[in-house]
Length: 223
Image (cartoon, rainbow, N blue to C red; front, side):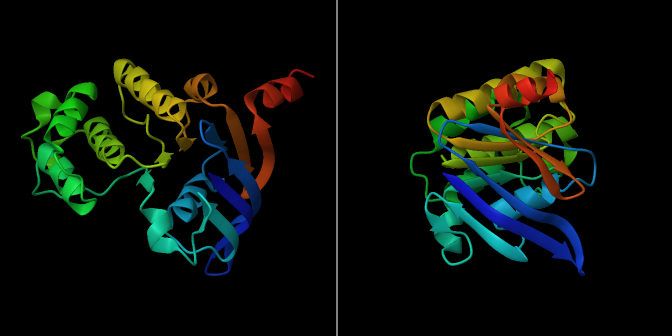
């Protein structure tokens, strides 16, 4: 579903990520791990087409992200670390706007279901700029799920969430993958990442230090 080859991104000549090569198949959940400044957010932005790669290629479901940008982006949902919201729209209006943009017909039942699933039903008439960080995260994840994407890209989706919401989001991620979706997620909650992820990409100062399955990672670190 996702194929990345020799991906590099530099800002003002300073490398943010260099030489990343990895893949994510349908049903897999890839965790991006590494310290702050390791290149996790840049990698996700490059996969989402939110920034142009300096070199290398990214393919989404067989579509080259540079040549077939629009078609590739239509099957990707990306939730950044600090998602931008429309301050004058309510929670429900955000989902209705998403349905309109993606041409989703008869969206009302799905919107109602997502509001309930993410425990934001009682916030549906609240303006987005009045929400806590955790509530905004759940709202944007609801919008992402409404799109029915093939690829889900999540930058620190568990940040600011209470333990119940962390479990809820983790279950949503696992469920999405179980239905054949491909997920890339970054998080500082390594214990949770270990429970939900099938594969790991370890970054260090923008360079790839490890890519493989969770089992491979456990084997290597057990010695």
